Length: 312
Image 1: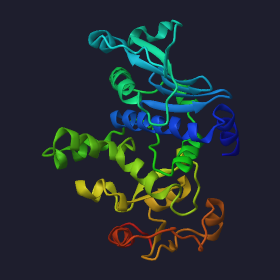
Image 2: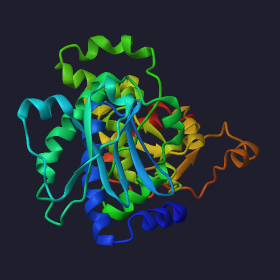
Image 3: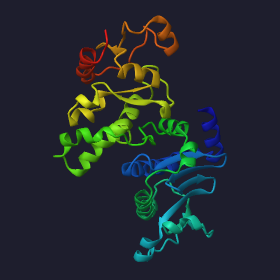
Image 4: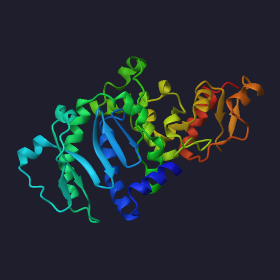
């Protein structure tokens, strides 16, 4: 986190300007994530922050301002005039943007963000086209993605921010297709996404727990979104319920999913007799572990887990 903070401070030394830039970036992240959470990523270099969709950089923050890609076709259609004090066209030509034609430029926002609503319209149109064009963020950019940068943004803006997820879809969804066939298409997609870890369920857990629900680990990219009441046993409402979820480090997630640990209604860990002391030590699990915050709405799910999943 210190390296991220130091780099960002060198890119945007002015804290008030930093707040403006990151408020705009948050809008961009939230919109993009609404199209699917495997399409985007963000990372930083020593002199800039880059936000990507698929194979394209669509948003960059540097000491020159905010570089953004606008929808060229929509600009031409609307014949809009962007000869504005806060806007400067980028005269460089980038061949990779031929797949989705763009006109790009540098935006230096004022405190009241007076120009942003106009720019946003054409930038968000471009984001939509990029999200429709690409199925996944390219592999190299997936490796470059910085969860630490997103953690910094969460701390700085004091709000929840989605985390991308690049897992491949799983095959067992067909088994449950009948149970949600009566839902609307949008609701069906949300249920499916919750299972493969690409939808709102994981993001809601990230925003709720801010890290591992037990250890507090904030390496979001390593954490797993775990249903308390197993997904296969849930109705559609329960599958999407934030209170039916724990964000856990992988060893705790696997132990919990296999019934080797559970938690009582106060959040204290319960350890199965099938785990001996040697295994506990290697797994880094101990009897003093506890869920850091329990809401009354967690309790029905924890009770189910203890009765139906936990191996006593």
